[in-house]
Length: 222
Image (cartoon, rainbow, N blue to C red):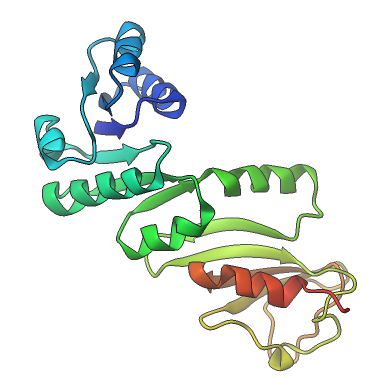
């Protein structure tokens, strides 16, 4: 597989080294000359000096034959532009972008980026594994439809405790698909399902509605 990596920082370096070890053909594009020199010493002749956001640079890199482009610079805008140029000008079948600001994830999805990696969410997921009290965990982001699946823990003094689902106003395009209760176990909820403290709720929602869904389900009584 031919993979182009845009960004030669620490993430790009370690990712590229691993991809090489797995036998992939790769090319790293980096616009900092010093980083290019350092990566060449470590990885060999797989580093190209240039701006991965520019069509000419991507053309010189043979992007038209690439199987995948991964943009992992420290700038969300650069990652978005690199992926868009690769997909729309060179028809790269798969693009992946690193997102530094979680608020930008919805924009990336709307503009057709196939996959995103949100480092903030990854850290929160690991925190949840060690500290189960964290109220919301991302389970999966769906490339199509700008949807994501999240898991929410209902707090003991939450406003939705004791309410039936039919009486809870959810954000648009949001569905509660599973309720895991300590007493009843997992169940597919219906209109008359009542939420209890400590219930784990699995929901499907639009990326842009995640914050509203979180506020609805974990807000506590004043």
